[in-house]
Length: 108
Image (cartoon, rainbow, N blue to C red; front, top):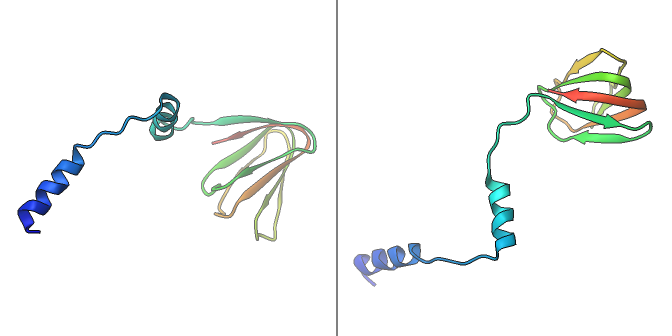
């Protein structure tokens, strides 16, 4: 196979179209659509429930109501937040946020 034949084969392959089922196409469009992240996300946690933030570095957690316990994977020191208090995350490890009482928090 010479270079011209190889180039023609690649061009022909580039023009190949595949028809996807509508539900799969919609899923792919949603997954690849880029949108600006919300400036701040508000979450409600019932007493005794938890949520994870996988990449907390640089984010600020603010306790809007209740009491929150923040603990980072492989970090020795935990943080307790009461109403009105905030914590700026300087750690890259996963963050577990646990509501010691029913709580509302914002993540910015």
